[in-house]
Image 1 (cartoon, each protein chain N blue to C red):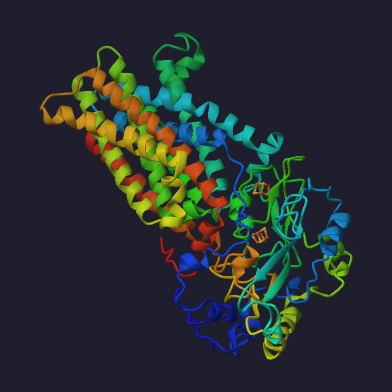
Image 2 (image 1 turned 60 degrees about the vertical axis):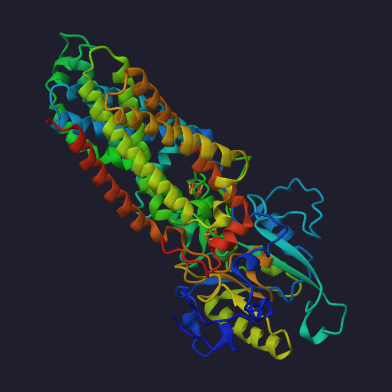
Length: 286
Length: 343
Ligand code: SF4
Ligand code: SF4
């Protein structure tokens, strides 16, 4: 295991481009929680561009979050976390009443090694020329295997058409050289779109700035140190966060679910051999 | 995973906080991952597929190496496996969001996707299983005596077909567990490499139990045949119970919760472990201790219990997995980076 200077965290000297396994020319997002104002323009822009129907909304009581989760018709989801108590709030405002309001626009991570893609038995899920992960709607047969195979809970089956849906990183817009609708709509540039090779250094600079200004808990979620762990090798849609991943409903050190599949096959084959031998020994002619 | 790397929020957490504490932090208790929609269709398929694959393999081995009496085992095994196979593709197709597109599964073979591998296993096994059953039916005169097809099938070297199909039978019995383990669902993927073996053992015990049940009800089965089958059945049940308890003990409190708490916990303890696994073993060994062969009624009862235990086991594992997917604490415990997931 690599050792990083705790003071530098994921922006340490060792963590240049090698910090993510993103392929050459990969495009993606960085979503910066410290810039998000919770306006949900990204959710709306996503729905408009992608022709997604309205959700069956009600009041959840979860702060301003009435969508709760990513779904078949919600490909961007803004999470709202209200925090009260000691040590809450950014350091620069430590004399303020001690409250903090975190907002984060969650999205498909377009994993460098994607669990959903490896699971899909129809080959509907593909990696595009932009290194993004897209479900081909004319292929998917709604088997539902990609749902539990995503360590972040992103794809969902639609009740309407029976197929799996998730963010395509606006594949159609990328083809035309446009940036994705959510990034275009975001009024504070909390969502930024671009080549990973540019976004990663920019995010690291941002984390440095935040730490200098007293937000010492800032870090990148989605490099090989946090989030893009366990064989996932990095997220092409990564985040700048200021609290533990779980607070935003993100797993700390997720693993690629297919990591142990070969070992699993081997143990099963071993058991099959043992069963065969046992059957032979008990039922043979004596 | 021992990383000395620390994020800012970790120092705020304080080094004294346990994994349990850390993973208690969550987002309104909402699930962190999406569970599959799989319901009774898939549960029934896992059971029938296992039964089909298992009885084919057991029957074929008995037919290959057994005496004349063992032919009965082979014959019953072939019929059971064919009957259990018949509904399997229908259950699978009905479960799809778009059933009319089922054949899209046949576009690709992805070795890293157990579902893709399973589809092909089912296809190959289906061919072997149908061929064997047809051959058996022809021999039993069920297809008529004179016609060419029946004559052709009678000429089929049944043992060779059976021998070639054994592998696919076992594969069908075990791949369900592998399929579940290759997900982010905590209860399935923690100790995931043990789930395939567990499904396979359950398939073999169900298969043996069903063959025993049929033969114990049939007239003219020799007691020695039943005794041999019972020995195999108890062997499978014993290994199954041991592996199941071992797996469960290694899940950790948070992830194992659905297997322990509530209605499902009761079904697991009394249905699967009690009636399905322990009861048949006790019934069989009670007779053995008294030094006599168990009566046919006891044999039939033990087999029926083991069989229903196999079905309940599939139900419990699928349902418990879905519950654990809904529990963010389980997901965060799994992905804490601090609990070893080496298995
Ligand atoms: S976040 Fe989930 S849905 Fe998105 S690419 Fe990764 S595994 Fe697939
Ligand atoms: S639901 Fe569709 S996209 Fe998901 S794994 Fe199945 S076929 Fe692939």
